[in-house]
Image 1 (cartoon, rainbow, N blue to C red):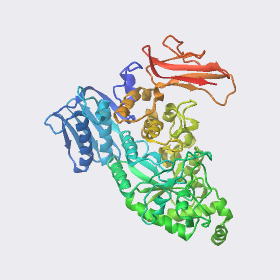
Image 2: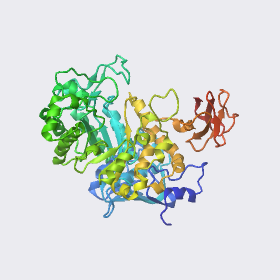
Image 3: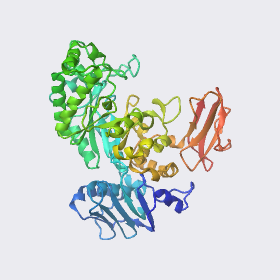
Image 4: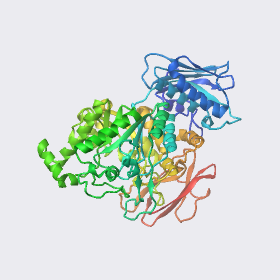
Length: 598
């Protein structure tokens, strides 16, 4: 049988909404050829590693299998073989699953690792259990898969600056990324509200800069609760090593010249006005404290990065470069005199000088500089990678100049955005449900050729202004970040929302096994309407869960199995309307009753 995509495969098997897909793999592979039968893991199964390069990932795989099944994978029966071959890309693999055994072929460790992740996904989701599970048939459907990613950069930003998260939660996120083949963990470690990295040469960064007296959110009213924390060097080494074993690169971000209040509070001499009093900021927003472009500041940053080089072997370092109002540069006599000496005419150019100075230092140490899309404004960095977060316009500017770009537009990629249109959900105001995340694709369609050449990847961002603990972080990120994993790995022709939503129940089962506090919005009715239209306006009701029906009321009563069934057609709502809706499967309610008052 010739190779076909998973989407075509589902159709070929006649799978409708009433049946779960046979091949529950996320992200969708490049190609999959179905086959008859299944491979059954048993006490006799043997794990065979034909090349020592794959030993480490094989032992990690074995450890998980031992946990959940009790099987040692050292029997004398059917075999799971890891085989090194020539000619495949770094992250590519071939997977053959047959009743008699499994063979995974790859040229490099990354590809072999991803082949093992796919095999785990083909098994029942309880294979991810942290304790032994009895009474499960550990079967994987037979198939031949040839797979590789559409983009080499598939990232997640985790913001530890606004709120500090323990290393265990950071590693949990990395583990979940690896399951779904994301490979770049962008760690946002410095902010106005906190400095999170131990630096031996500058101890006040963590003695002072890692702590704020309270949190005041966007207002001036604080909660009176001190907050802080930082990662020791040993913590960072542990996180980086944990990520390495899962083929995830940890990219540190040290913001320059803005978002630097915490560091300036610790060392005021880094500011344009050292005589002023600074403290770690308690509110969110864009603040005017900038690093001064002085020898003292450059020496400080070079010292910081030099200590980071030993901790983060990543070839990529993020330097921020965004949201830096130039008020202090305009006010500072030193800055104005420096501009005259340098022969530059604007404070924007002075930031360009600053960023170029540090970019050159990082390049001399073998690092590729990543920055937010403001780094495109000055054009001073040599061969940077720009993260386009203010929509697609900066990406267009970058790729037209031959600069590599990672797309992370905030309306599709910021996981702190709303995922349920409900008044009691605390998040940023943009409505970004699971379907919206999934249907995005990182390309500028009007510049297809340039996109293919210079758009190197895609990243979701978990900013934590409204995310204060582990449970909130997990519910905002998942399952939406699983959808994002398919966006980054799977080529556009193989992406399909209908297929993805049918695979979601098993994804959620996996998240249950991993003890993730994911959002249950998948089971809740979504109100789909244009917020900019005047009343009366058309309203659609949607349910991501594909096996249910929507029942609703317009009189304020709670929907029951006898309430009207939504027929899929838009209806008009006026100001003052109250709609209550709920999903039902087989006459039984699923999810929560969702209420919308207009």
